[in-house]
Length: 621
Image (tube, rainbow, N blue to C red; front, side, top):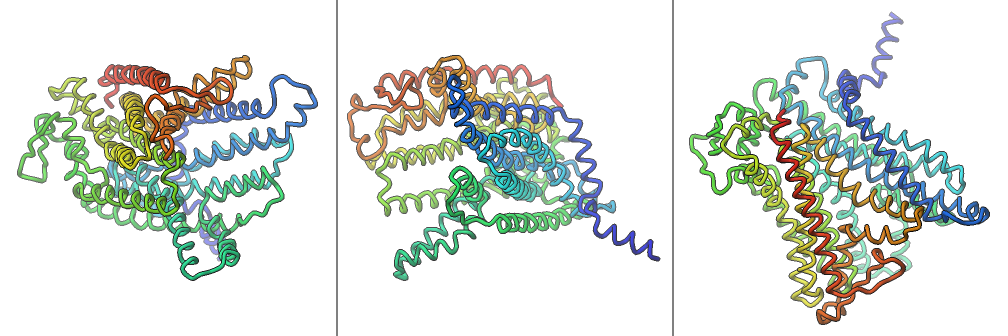
């Protein structure tokens, strides 16, 4: 009797009950994938490059021994803070991508209903998926710990900072992965899950705190509170506000480490408890939805598939039974009518699915209207604070639009072909009379059409404030060059990796890795080689190819002062791309350099298109 009671007690408190056999199965599958080892190698390589660049920026390559020793502590702080902030952002992105198809794969391959016929519970399915894939991220963090421990010996970095940053990174990654898993249950497309998860996190971490801040200040001003009293009220709620946002938390402890002695309104246990509690709520909701979806699939009902069949007939598993003629003409197996194809068939078929998942494009229109309303509210807030006539405001807006547009281009282009492979309709599409060029060009046009609303917001912002006299008309010409080469290059790279790989996650991660390698790792390597080789202008030349640097330089013609200047009187401050100090460049020189960089990127994008065409029929499954 005692033995049975002890066994029951051990089973109740055994942590493996939360994971079940799903955790072991996922670990065995992950250990056989080569991309996991490649990801670890690239991760430690990027960390080493960052550490070397920060070291050379703080400690001169040639100098006296005393000077080098005096700068070691400062270099150690900068290296550790750079690695910590990089890990904090990279882990969340990887968690979103890796869990974007965690449940949708089981739903699509009709194995989720089979799992419910076993003793495995829905909670074990959810926890097994989350913990097994987050374990890969924990291994990446463990890889960087020896480097951080070695650098910490230089002094100035307490162990408390390393432990607290690790806890913040893990809890933020867990919450981001939990949201991605929840959204993947009823969304079969990985790109949709990634975009929606990033949108939800952006609203929670940035939009919601900004709205609460504006509302709080407005309420305090309405009540007529004095500034000392209002600052006291804000300082009272500052720990709670910072604890709700992991970005504010990581910046707070990093600022305290770099400049010790200041007051930090931050509580690590409170922050970790809040993030773990939110993650538990999201996972509990996911477990409930997984059980409902699995039971419906077990009895032969799949509402998720029926919605997809209405919006995209090729994504429906029943479409594998369709003939090639029906595939091209767009016949819906659940409808007696035939939808006629308008324009290129691949473009028509791709645009059948709404931007935001739903029965039709109604959700897409609602989302676009909500984005426009939020944008107008920020304009109103900027007008009230008299900040719309400043150059920094328009640089921030254009940077945001360019970043979101590039992100959407990467996601949409990298998923065009892999979705066909995962839905087992790629072989059907290749048997149609369409040529490889028609298929690839249709995929590229559909990816651009998907991103057109985002670029439309950018164009609307530039046109609106050009008419208002805050932006010079030449900005439109330069931004057109930037958007053209950015779209061509990222679309070509995304289609190549989508044709090269069989899984959507692999294609998206590879395209993201290319962008990070070119525009994050590339400048650091250029700076490292330039310092060691004595070529100080190597980094300056490389930064001409960076989209963020180009955007900042282009929007330098904004503001109430620059917008009213004649075309020939415009001067561009090329601080990041000059050899030494600040250099003023004319309109003609900047236009020629931007056109040359755009031509080079477009040629590389066309090369990716050619390589994607060569791989189109080689890797069908």
